[in-house]
Image 1 (tube, rainbow, N blue to C red):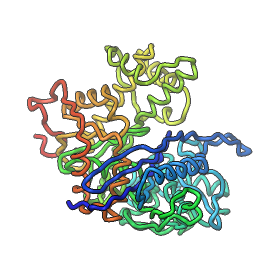
Image 2: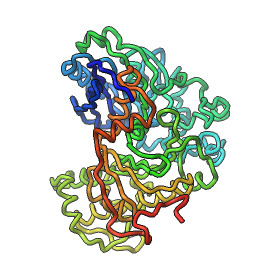
Image 3: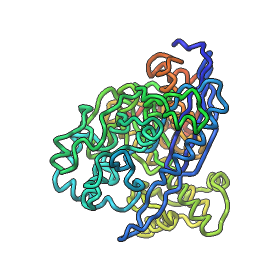
Image 4: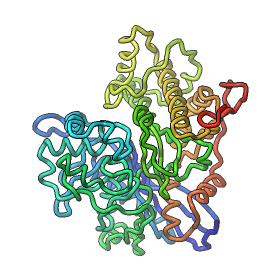
Length: 495
């Protein structure tokens, strides 16, 4: 892979479900240097809508904080040429004549149950899977739109933008729907085109979302008034990176797709393998596996596991109760716990909304006549053990369903810093876990931006090689073997 000798920088606006960051990268003269120049909270807001209190995203606040981060990136750069934006999936803003119609709903808002019922009354889950290849999640965009239709809100809109595309629009004035995030909506067919016939059948407006924009496309420079306000005289160009944060993360995993599985672990744990084409088998539907588009047209064949949300909501409840220990302290205590309880089902729907997570987990156990974790260290240990078990089970399913002989598991994102989680996942699988990079999403984002600006070149494997050279992973070997061969593969060829 060749690298430019230019001295230039690119910035990543990385919006997660609980926090956002702006990262600055120097990918010139053979270097890959990454620094965080801004970090800010992403706190949802509860707003009374005349019938109930609904959960929304504070998008104007996020945009303000992201712009402040871009301004800081400009101050620290000698040549800021590009910006990429990624965020969580499925959520969107309704638009009319270029203006946002109210704050976007949060995917954890309770409104989507009626949307699920309305969609499935017209198109059954199997039919949907054959059309869009997506796992069932009650908050997928298609169900949210059905809920909007029932509330009469779609009648007021002439368009919609997914969250990263909305930020791009506010920065550049350009509207489009980046492909990786479009693939999470349930409205994109497995053929890569908007499924207009399905939208008509569901009485959803055809053309609500703009045309597909390919990953890596140049969306143009910042608007003059935006650049002036941020002190960015050069007006860096916004690049349509893999705007679903998991797609950017997977792009930066230094793996061999033929023998690896991945776990992108943050608020959610996205567990799967990378394929060249969709797999819409009935077995995949029954296992609730999804086919989402990744960088360079790859397919992220995966299943969502509840992820670190369980831990963060548990710590948040402890703080509400007046207990101020942080997560690192609780994890250290949990590592010394000898579990005397079974793991729980992390996918249980009761764990999706915010609230008293420890109480819900105890309720899961007591309903089944099982001993619940009683102390805080036991609770944290139960969560980590249960996540590790869910991750291991899902890796095995991904391997079997896809025909991939998995010999190594790459765990990236915030969860890669959780040593207990990494070790327990390796133990339960009997396979090595390569942990890191922590900043996989930001790295995938800036590498795609850099490639669009010809600061680097090459394919996805070439970009992954850069990551492997610069950010070597932490190795976790299983402490016991699941077979006579210490690193026997799971999936195809395991015999």
